[in-house]
Amino acid sequence: MFDFLKNSSSPSKSVKNSFWNNHTDMHSHIIPGVDDGSVDMEESLQMIKIAYGSGVRRLCATPHIREGWRTETEILRQKLDELIALKNQSGLTDMELLLGAEYMLDEFLMEKLLKREVLTLPGNLVLVETSFYAPPINLDEMLFEIEIKGYTPLIAHPERYDFYQRTPSTYASLKDKGYLFQLDLMSLQGGYGRSTQKTAKILLEQGMFDYVGSDMHSADDAKIIAQFFKSSETIALSNVPSTK
View (spheres, rainbow, N blue to C red):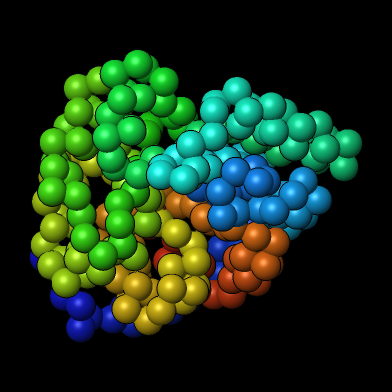
C-alpha cells in the first residue's frame, strides 16, 4: 500500500493561516511545569500568542500523563484556567483553550479508564502514545479497551515511531481497526529527521491523518511552526479532514 520511493510532483501553494480556519491544534504542551513542555506561565503565554499569530483559534493542551508525569487533573485545570485568564488579558479572547492529555499506553491509563477519569479531546478522543522504539506487547488489547469504554483512540504522531517506519503496512492495519492518526507539524517541518519527515509526507499523500497538532513544547517550537506556515510546504495539509 505504501511506496516509500514515491514523491509527489504536484505544484505547491501555501495555505498559510487559512488552514486553522477549519482545524484545531490537537496536541500541545502549553501547561507549565507539568512535563517537558513550557517552563512557566510567561513562556506558555508566548507560545499561545505565536500560535494565535499563525491563525490558531482552538488549541488543546495535552500534557504527558505517564511514569514521572502524573499531574492530578484538578491541578491541570487550575493551570489552564490561569492561562485562559492571561490570554484574555492579552486580548486573545477569541482563542479557545481546551484540556486533554497525551497518555502513554500503559497500565496507569488502563486504571484511569476503569475509573472513567481520562481527559478527552473534542469528539471523545483519547490521545495516546507509546515508546518510540517498541510498541507494548499488548498494544491491540489496550487500544481495544479504550474503545469498549466508549472512547476513540487517537494515536499521536504515528509517523515518528521507528517500528512503524520499518513495517509500514502496520499503518493500514491500525486504520482498518478504526483508530485515528494525529500528525505532528514538527515532523512535516523536518524537526525529527528525514525519515520521519518522509513518512509524514507519504501518510499525508495516502490520506491517513485525521488530525493535526503542533506538539509544541516551547516558544522556540512555536516559532519554527509559525515559520513553516509561511512556506509552500503547508499545501500538503489540505489532505487532512476539517475538524470544525
